[in-house]
Length: 241
Image (cartoon, rainbow, N blue to C red; front, side):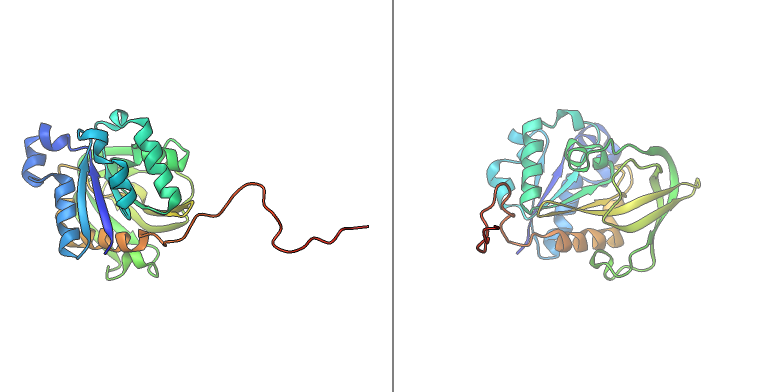
C-alpha cells in the first residue's frame, strides 16, 4: 500500500470562514479523504505541528508527499526543507499543488524563482491534456473545465519540464503550464496548478482523478541511489606500455 502524507500550512482555513466552509477538515483533510477512499494509506501534516508534522519517522515512511502552501512559505524551517529535498533525491515522490510553486521545497528542487503572473477574478479555466499517453491523465478526457479559478499566467519561471502534461487557458486570455513533471535524483515530482483555497477545486472528481493518478506515478521505485565519487574498476585495466 502506498503511504501518502498530505502537507498543508492550514492557515487560510483558520483565517477565512469561506475556506473553512469549503474545506471544514482543511485542504489536507479533503485530499487525504479521497485518497483513503481510493485505497491509499493517507495521513496529514501541518505547519504548526512540531517539525511541521514532518518528523524523520513520518518522512522516512512516506512514499509520496503532497504539498500545499501559500501564506506562510517563509515559516517553513530550512532544516525541514533540506530533509524533504533529501528524501526526494532518495526516491520519495513529491506532488506540489497550486501556490506550492512558491514554497521553499519546490524552489529548492527547481533552482529558479518559480514566479508567475496571477489574478483573482473568477476566471474560467480549461486545462488541456497535452500528453495523452501519460499515466497521470489515465481516465481523463481531452480537457478539464473549472468554472471559477485563480488565474496563473506565463511566464512561469521554472526549468523546462521533463514532460508537460497540462496547458491551461484562462478566460482573461492567459495560458499556463499547469501540469509539469520532473525527476530529481531517484525521485519524481509533479506540479499541478489548480486549487485556490476559495474555490471547491479539490472536491472536483476530475481533479481528484489527476491527483490519484499522480500518486501512483510518483510512488518510488525501491532501489538504492547510485554510488558517487572515486570508483574502483569493475574489470581489470591493462597496463599500457
